[in-house]
Amino acid sequence: MNYPSDYIFLPKRDDTFYLDLTKFKNKKVLFVFGDSWTNNLYIKNPYHHWGYLLKCKLNYDILINISSDYDSNYEIFDAIKYVFCQEEFPLQINEELNELDEYKVVIEWSTPMRDSTSVAEMYKPYNLATIPDLKSNEPNTKLWMDYVTNWFRTEIYSYDTQKRILFLQHFFNIHNIDWYSFMGFTPLVEKEFNNSQYDFRKWIDSSRFLFLNGFPNNMQDYLIQQKDPSFNDYIGISEMQFENNRSKYFRNDDEMFTGDGHPNILGLEIMSNKIYDLIINK
Image 1 (cartoon, rainbow, N blue to C red):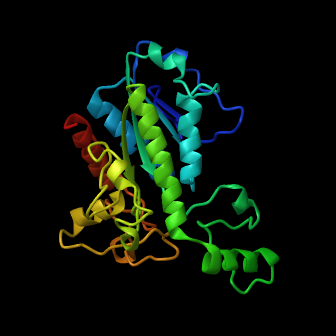
Image 2 (cartoon, rainbow, N blue to C red):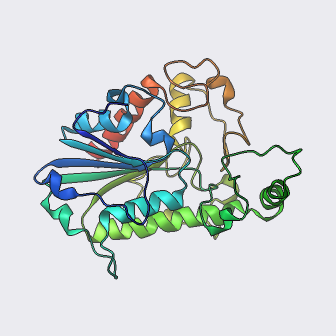
């Protein structure tokens, strides 16, 4: 894919990851983080990606998009830490950011159930975004199924994501970083855990987090409501392969959604407008 000069796309991070921010001195920079809902690689024209549309609406100079397919919220958190934090502790802001004229951060969080911790290494090549052949005799098929069926606890994964959101919120606030967030295609907290010991949303700044409370509680459901204003069908924290009761809204592969439920060109435009409204009305 050929990106315009004002669109920097960085798909992968590891221990050697380094982004030279000095190249953008005195520029207005928009940083976006997420998974496939943010990298939009399935849309061949990068001018239609929601991050680029938002950059243009904000009249910013540069978009830096750091996202990969199937990224977990652990990986999204680490990507943000790589870019904004010095390695020394306590965590301090990357001094190169002070050379930018202005910048904002927008984070699209994935489903909390995606696991990229060392636990997930035990049941590779499967992860919570892939379904194994359930008739397979491979040892990891049984391990994976035992984990999902018996050991997986949604509330713990939701807590892990909320914890990362709160850590970042505190870090961003003490360093005066202008940040915004939303869930891509699942809720942050399942309805069953509303106001429970696993619900920390009262500490999250709702003026910076789209869909934090109420319905819709994620961007996908917001887009569905643009197609069907009567839509109010709650979904839990899941992967589309597990619970795809929204498939009737995707199967036509229209301007709003691709066939697998990702936002298509119209959906990306609506996303960028929704996030822009959040920013300018902050």
